[in-house]
Image 1 (tube, rainbow, N blue to C red):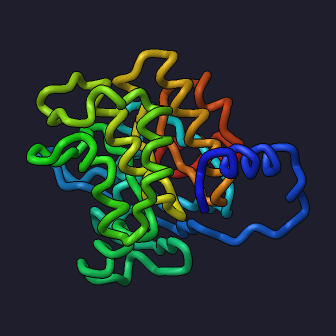
Image 2: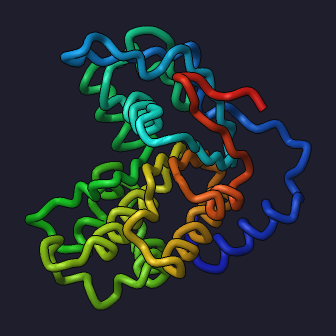
Amino acid sequence: MKCDATMDDAAQTERSGDTAGQARASVLRVIGLKKSYLTPQGRVAVLRGVDLSLEAGASVALMGESGSGKSTLLHLVAGLDDAEDGEIFVDGAEVTGLSDFGRAALRRETLAVVFQQFNLISSLTIRANVAFQARLAGRFDPVWQEELIHRLGLGNLLDRYPEQLSGGQQQRAAIGRALAVRPRLLLADEPTGNLDEATADDFMELALDVVAATGCAFLMVTHSARLAARLERQVRLSAGVIEKP
């Protein structure tokens, strides 16, 4: 699907409720997830049985105090760490049962992560960094890449390398890389922490356009109540579990 006017039209249709009432397939299911860490003071339980689900087209803000386990939960969902107990299903695949190779394939083809630390490849230009995951997954679309570059304000930075960019500019490139693949599940760990308010709003608008047009699920860790309110649902992680509404 070309994501210029077509994407805008699809997003408008979704947001206007034309697809209301249609069943939405489950993209993420987290069941009874537990995780603890060994410290000099003893073992500390971070997740004590987390249950969470996202359907196609859903956008959810994950909130909570610093140290409550929000980033840990995202890393487990992305297959970057191992849970002690519980199950994680991403687009039908049981992440907890996948090999390292299988998890890498999942991150390449099915989900995308916007990390706090950017994780750009220092030897690649910004243009190549934005296209990197989409090319690996065989989903590179030059029209969509150019729209991302325009929407994220990266046009004059494409031939530079990550070390030549500010933190906010690197974050925009990392966001573009994640969106370029059009993932089934988009995970974002404080994606606007290094952005000014206007650029943060632009990211939110773009991410929600992608969610509406492609039907991906979007889970974002944030401390911003203002940005969280723009998503379909807000959940809070406290004492190792998702609080009941």
